[in-house]
Image 1 (cartoon, rainbow, N blue to C red):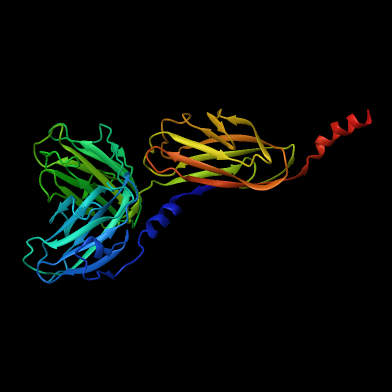
Image 2 (image 1 turned 30 degrees about the vertical axis):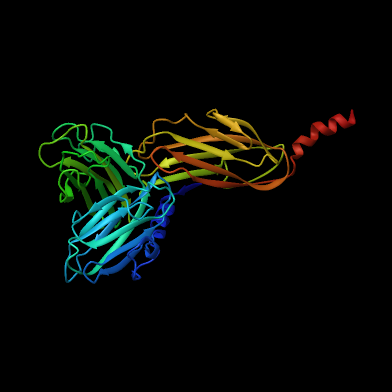
Length: 413
């Protein structure tokens, strides 16, 4: 039975939007009075009176995770120039700050949670502290910011490095173009966030961020922040399913060892996943098996790439079974590990999955005792989170009558 994880990914994307239309609670100018901002929610506020400062608290996760925040001042009837800053847990140390790099306001991120699971803060103030901002909207999105590198050549959508949550690269020669391919879905809205100087060592390159379709045509582009700056694209809903890519290129000459960048992809405000399907089935049956003591049953575990984009990296499997009623008697291909009640495969599928490819492993059990239980499976992929998996029910009752024949023969002799 193949279980598509696109539903799980869509649910994850939906669940991050936990509230809309929330408002700040004044006073909120200090960490102790900061208004709570939930990931995926939209909050409205104002800078009023002149000199007002608003702080918002966001919960950390760990240092491999982080966030992207967008400040929308386009609806303000007074000043539309406001500064958005990301602060450490102390509420003082600035991690990133921005004024005007997003077409509707300002943005920060991708920014790691440098203080792990502790609270971090966002600060909003009018850029000159000499005017009000009659209304603004603020959103924050969580994503995995532990980044993976580009693979050259990747200058077009067709040759783009398959995208994970966050990628990194370098414009090491003039005119270098780096594209990252992803599986776009009709009516989904990608969010792209580019940090042109993640190390803070002074990148000399002014980077352009583009969204391209499968024919390599540019469907959205931004270049507002200058050398080493940050760029953001919040796309309109995509017109169709298929291959898309986001591309990073220099605006004019400029390159070098410090011309590094980090770029994140979110899908409808949540984590991006290509279309994948999980296989967890008893061979010759379904997700439920009925056996008797002495029978052999085979479980198949697998992962299929249902997207038009290659899924790179190692694929790993494991199956955890109840030893009270099952014993492993064979695996194909040979398992690479068995510990306690878990059998695992690592290093047997290193080269990823092409579009349409399915890779499976089999584990054969002998039923050794009566039970009504489950075998739980886990699948992880280098470029994506671990924790995918499924479960298959097994019921073992009584003894296989065929096994009674040799037993009766022994008794009568």
